[in-house]
Image (cartoon, rainbow, N blue to C red; front, side, top):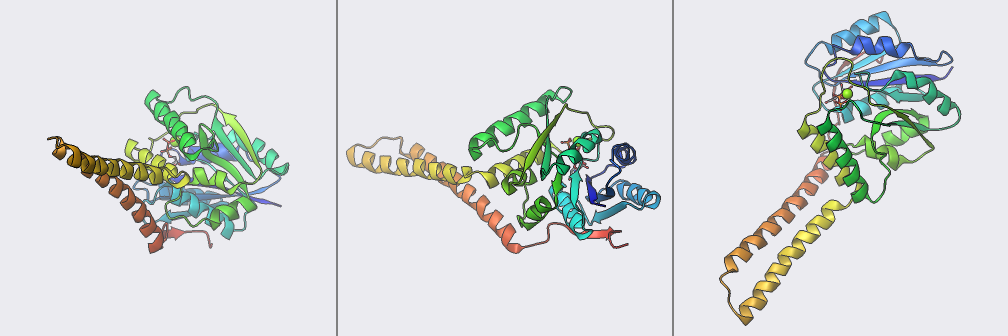
Length: 303
Ligand code: UDP
Ligand code: MG
């Protein structure tokens, strides 16, 4: 019997995890065997205890707990690595808060049986979500599509998806230190099918994303899948160069007292350009240091 692993990244989800588990098990077609891979991303609440209680009730539950909060991207990677370790044929990735409806699982599995390798999901409508979050999310998808020159990241795409073994291996072959899995899903290719669903509010608990963390996440995606940094830096350097040329020509023809202003402008563009280059260098440094993307404190994967 084929094995499907359900990967759930959890950060401070004590309020909802049991409910999510109860809901998911109602929607699992019975011609597969299932494993839950619950990843505790350094929660400060009792998430890990809830995981252990669940594991005591249901032998299909595997958990692993990080030594601190490493972020959802790291939790997804840990989930995929664990799935590979226990020899899963496919994985389904879901959020812990029931915003990814488990009722779609049977349909995902149908498409998996038809040979699709990455069955992903996106929001049909976002009615019910806060206006400001919708605004930022839609702006991100627009900017991303424009800068990366393709519409590969479907508007409203979720991490909620089914991946077959080849797609899992492909994601694991990517060694990016700062991962942007939403972009990688498209990058790896394979046979894809998209399912749509309407926005569902969080069942319990609160969102773990601040504006700052979402902004960082969005700029990581844009940086990794477009060459925006390169041409912005080039543009800034060209502006600075233009000012230098202007000053030289101007100095030769006639002297204005705008000089100091132009020098300030010049410094501004040069500093911005240098800042951009520095950011890129830092990313190369992070990759070069080759630190592990997460550290595990405990797990029952080997039990
Ligand atoms: N999450 C995580 N690590 C983090 C932040 C979030 O593992 O640092 C998990 C979280 O527990 C949830 C999923 O990622 O299962 C999505 O987070 P959340 O629901 O807070 O995001 P939102 O739906 O508000 O965008
Ligand atoms: Mg959520």
